[in-house]
Length: 284
Image (cartoon, rainbow, N blue to C red; front, top):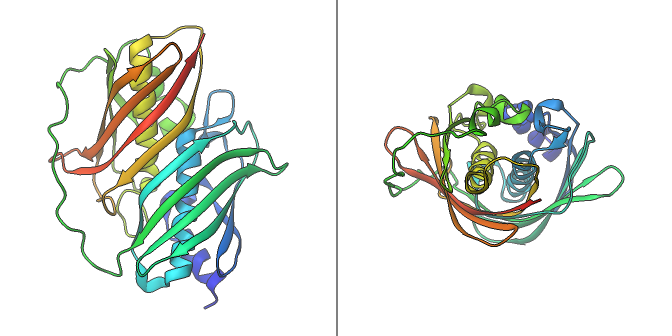
């Protein structure tokens, strides 16, 4: 089987990739291109591409290029760390992801990913550190204590899960008040990776949304404009096949900029799956 055919088969076997509608355009020894056709389901209101979708596409591109570089025996592959810079909004248009291999190690690849529209407008840029597990079992991960346990979704919380992409994921805002947030992600077949665990793209989307909501929990609703300039995340291993919960808390803010920290854990026993920070901007 050719490299292109193998990657296409792997992508097609990944439910979350099918959910997004992502497809392979081309692949070489050290680069590849994916295309994300516009789909209302992947958006926020106003047909703007959800930041979690952009992060998902970048992580999939990095995974795919690592798989192409290290070989299928490297599976499962997962993104141990990612830095996402959001450069502009994609509004009702296709998006392309170009992944470029920066360096190959024995089991780790460093990948640069750029997202842009068909007209060449930059949408996002990421730096991915992707690990191949070569069939090894993940080691035990730490547990966290969660948060205060209060449940107050506030005025905005009930509306967040009704936006196109968050509704498709099944996100549910349990708490969104006093500069903190708690959002759950159910385990759905359509959110799964090729090995049946929750896809790391869905984990990144949960982390992105939870950090943003912690910022909104500080300001409350209003006639504001908002966006995520950047996101940093570390994923501790291939996510398990179960529901997740994310805890967001505002660390600092100034007039327009908000820094939020997020922990993502399993819903059953609070095993840590991922953690990161979200830089958010809310403008009057």
